[in-house]
Image (cartoon, rainbow, N blue to C red; front, side):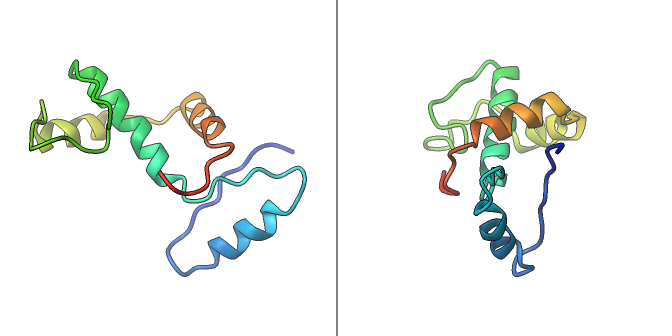
Length: 99
């Protein structure tokens, strides 16, 4: 079977579906993948501005080496490749949903 990606809105049954699928021996479920996908994208952005803080999701005392518009411009130009998604999901194999 080919891998597939399921997502949904809050309160739409995705947690129940994740629990049901997670019980199958041939299924791998990444609960709440958005934080890790965001972290991977943020790491790419930080590398593009020659910055690599220990905690990519935040900065200390507003010491960000970029503006909000720098980040939104970067995001608007990004295309998530199949390879990027595959690698990001592979990193989440044992992810519990907590970042």
